[in-house]
Image (cartoon, rainbow, N blue to C red; front, side, top):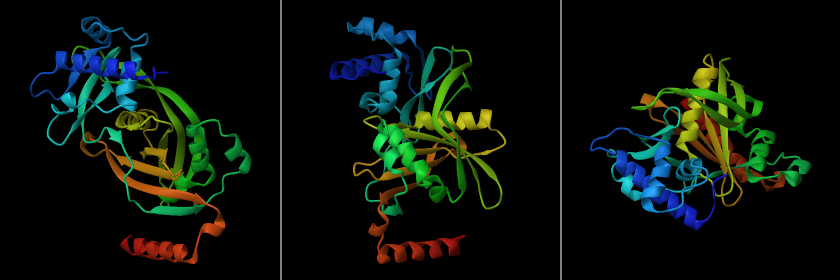
Length: 284
């Protein structure tokens, strides 16, 4: 696990800025570097090198914003994200989104809470609790409009990663929090990798990029529909679905769900949802 204190945070930021500056060239569309440069940066900066160099990469992906000095050098309208790029290589690449944040002010859809009491009582972590609530309340079915079935938890595999300049292609170990398969009303089958984040970690475009690669390399005959989910501050649940037009990942849909006791669903709520469903069916 990554170190979790302010000194390490500042050290990691300094290291990643050093590496970027070392390798960036004006007009670069990719900024690649070998893993060993993380230790070289620490030595040059006069700071203690992390015991696990991967902590630096983890932190910049999931725990902190990309430094402004780096983001200011991205192409217009883009930001940088840190991708795997071959054996012991990484690459900054421009993306439309990096950290995935829920929209504020989006209406919350009330769903009768079907989480078994024992599951709610003994969930061991935010992530486990989140995945359990998504599963037992069939939120993926509601969100996607498909019948969805959990295929495997903590799906671990490796994907082929194209090397950046100076790096050979290699296989990269990845993990998806839960893997679902779905069937839509036309009978088409879909693969739905689901990423969940709890605590202070953030959802990152890197996880979604990896899930698209898992889908295309391991489930090529199925349509890929990567999903991400997260608790909001009030314990309601956000679900995202992603698309990848022209090689750039974008948020295709976002919905917020509030799990409530059945008696908390009012007649006014039901009328609102009925009207919305009728409007959506006319659009179809």
